Picture 1 (tube, rainbow, N blue to C red):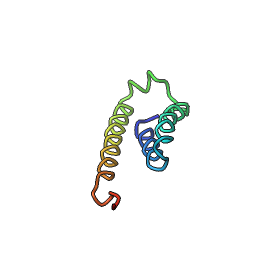
Picture 2: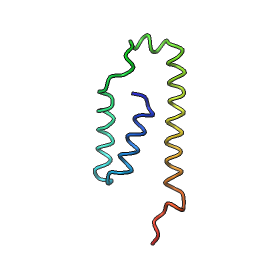
Picture 3: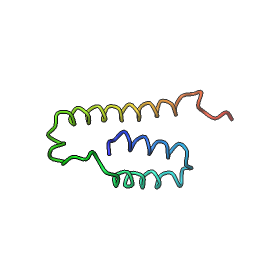
Picture 4: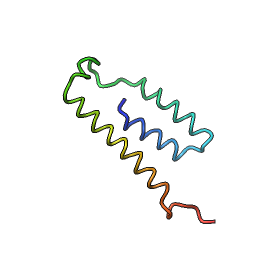
Amino acid sequence: MIGFNHALVGGLIGKFVPWPIGVPLALASHFALDMLPHYGIDHAKRDSSRFWKIFFTIDFFATLGLAFGQSQITTMPCMSVAK
C-alpha cells in the first residue's frame, strides 16, 4: 500500500474517532491496509522499474504534503475553540 493511502486513512480516523479509540484504530488500519493486495507485480520487477521509482517518489512527496497540510489546518487560529 502506498504511503498516501496510509496517511489519509490514519488522518481521517484521527479526525472523526475520539482520541482514546482513534489511536489504536489508526494503528490497526495500517495492518488492515497492508493485507489488501498490492500492485499485482513481483517485488523485484517493481523495485527495478523506472515507473515505480517515479511513482513512489511522487507518493512520498504527496504524503509529506498531506501531513504538512493537515498540521497547518489544525493549527490555524480560526480552527481553535472559543472559550
